[in-house]
Image (cartoon, rainbow, N blue to C red; front, side, top):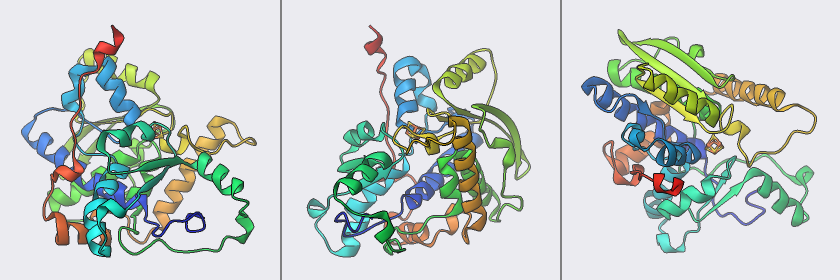
Length: 311
Ligand code: SF4
């Protein structure tokens, strides 16, 4: 579909999710081992980040500095990818297809991604062009940054970022693959899940939260003294699979849709030949050939107190 609409290259954002997992797992372990700025709070949801910046700025330091998957992929497209295809980054127009409308605001912060098209708008554009879904043939992603792991796939459902990060953090701690890689206790369809997970002999206290109403509940818990090490928050109830730019299923209720989409993502993970972000060959290539180490400014960001908006 994207090629029919004019795309020269079609890359997989799941690669970007794997990059976010790598950087966030590394940052989490640094903080966990030093005890600094805990709990680490995920930062891949721009609506959640803005919520913290406006309503809870004293927790800005807790946000992971890791950029979101589309933002990591965006900066790598204009650097690593541009070099690989021998193009001046100025000549590349990068478009992210997202389940999310808030990403339209996020890309203005970095300037690497030129446009965001949520899924519903993409479908509308395709129909307006008079193109037919029936005429579409199966095709593959392009080869550079075109591979994603099962861990990257489950980023789309609440609890998935935590599970993906824990799989990689375990490898960073032990050099081994996690035996029971399905960490079901952090899977979260209800909006607020708390769990303790044993990783390399250490107990990690986790909250997985979705829906901003539950984010307020999270801060109430923290302010009552509850201690977590790793907190994942998605502004949309259920995570990105229920994002504001997603198709609306007229046959199912919101809840049924969330359950079906979440199940589909976990099934994709189960069927994936690569289920750990650190085993994604495209991720390995970008570190080996280009980044060399964790913490590149291309993949990280900072945040600002926006509470003045409240007057
Ligand atoms: S949870 Fe919702 S607002 Fe946040 S990134 Fe996903 S789709 Fe966007």
